[in-house]
Length: 165
Image 1: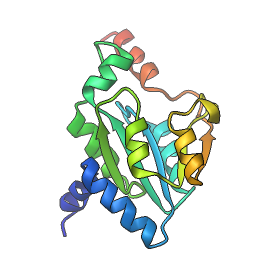
Image 2 (image 1 turned 180 degrees about the vertical axis):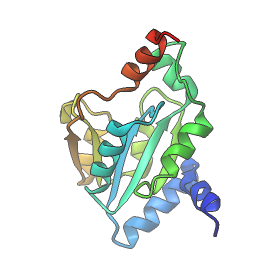
Image 3 (image 1 turned 90 degrees about the vertical axis):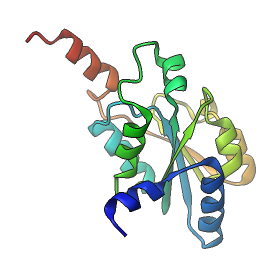
């Protein structure tokens, strides 16, 4: 199978992701779920996602749709289209699945997948993480990971806007 085919297999619909996660769990895999916009992929994202993957054996990323990003971040976002953001994430060796969600939060996707581990960045408290109640009720765990200072899509965007050429 070509690398492009491998990348494309990681980009899943909700239905395919649900079946895949079910099969992984049946095989004894520990499924980690996180979500975000991942608009301009940077070192902070890579560090966070690698740490998230280390919390289990499979990493599923819920990716905000373009409409969802626009509602959350404003009319100037996303900078990269859905295909680019999906492919960037799917190309990472430690990412096992990327699933787009149209809603403002991944609550319904979390309910469908029932991951073993739900993880978000350090700007969240475990109680404030969307879907935490569902995961904990199911017997999973919820955790946060610290940010790497100095890395954010907003900072990159501002740097580009303020650059003088």
